[in-house]
Length: 292
Image 1 (tube, rainbow, N blue to C red):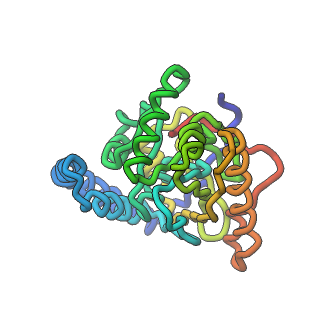
Image 2 (cartoon, rainbow, N blue to C red; image 1 turned 90 degrees about the vertical axis):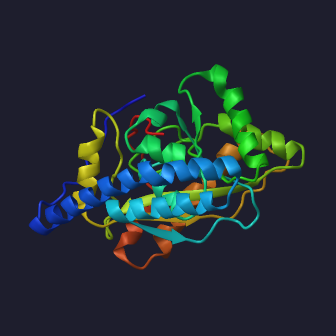
Image 3 (cartoon, rainbow, N blue to C red; image 1 turned 30 degrees about the vertical axis):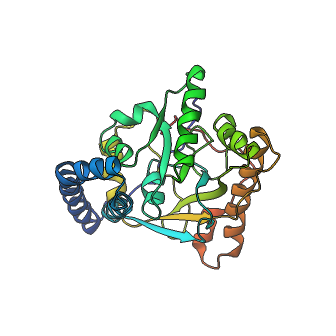
């Protein structure tokens, strides 16, 4: 479902910002070329052989991509220490994946179209993403089985249960379908740690919309990010949510409430103007076409 969408904050065409954008674009192209030639084959081999280097490849590559695009990751707190972790976050942009994976080696759930997207498909495959066909309810059981396999193998899994991106001003309702593996594993006494995470973006002073949606072409969208200059990605990690004796709908509702509190509490606790990026609003934000 798509409704009215908010325009991106205009990007100033200052000469130094434009020159920096060209340097970022050159570095981005060189990084992707190097990844295709060296990192992708090495990562494929490392994943097949189970080498620990696969985790360093993912986090360092995503860290470099964030730096090139101009995203500064501001992490508050940390994931709960007990692994594996079922990580649930609100969804603002495709850059959520790169920012999170620059901090921890993670496996993501994403729609099947992502596998063929330019740049994003490379990142997704490099991270061992579990793909789901949007709208194909008959495949939910198969996908949930794949998610459970990731968790049983000790992997940390990230799910964006809003099912669509927004401008990040508030948290959309969480869909409970992919909480089913958590419910089933909890019933058998083998549940992973349920970890809520809140994500917001700012220009250092005010919340900004960095989403890619609707009829936007990816390369112009990427170029606008590079021209913007420094974009702050604020990631707040919450305390684990108890899972024992709860069904998937209860887990989804409680986790959403935790993410909402994370966004609101960081807004109250920050002394600088950039705290506004964590404030929630009462009105429902504009919803954009799924980007993951």
